[in-house]
Length: 225
Image (cartoon, rainbow, N blue to C red; front, side):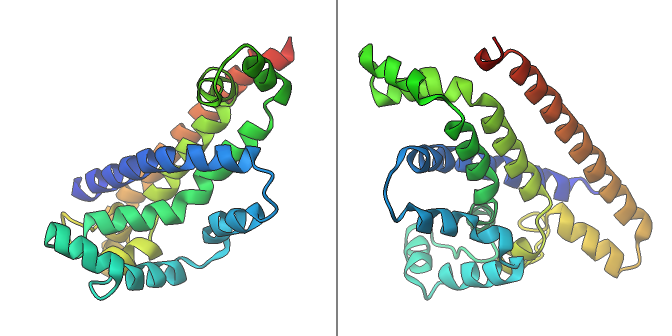
């Protein structure tokens, strides 16, 4: 069993999930509290990867980060290497592809927090930032955990986007989903089955733990008292 694709996949999924926390939490907070009439356009852009074919998204990402684009040329000037067919390029593509799987659970959880609790915190002198960390986030923890796990699992199972943007470079962009595809193409069904079983077991155990934790958090929620 070659563990290199697994290590690369978990590294990619972990990095993507961390970036999505940094981007997704502020974005979901703004969407939850904003009364801007045009915020539905932002929600549409965020949700677009759910309905967009991965190959289409991967193509546009590949064009956007090519050395001839402004983003790709800036990265090339700063770091001396191109974004396409590299691990940083995979992270960028994965963040865009998994964005709705983080933001939507965050947003749903934030919307369920009673606005009166936040108003009480404000009247007691708490800033909006402190209110978020002490009131909104603790009460939304189940949704935050769900969004993080879904982002991680979704990134772990990516295929079309990572193949277009990262290619199939061993040790650099050859993640486990592409490795399984290669095994099947080479008629190496035993290796493909072993890798698939590992992903299946990991996904099952992860989701089971999330559901169990969410049930526990729901049971101790202040709303149930």
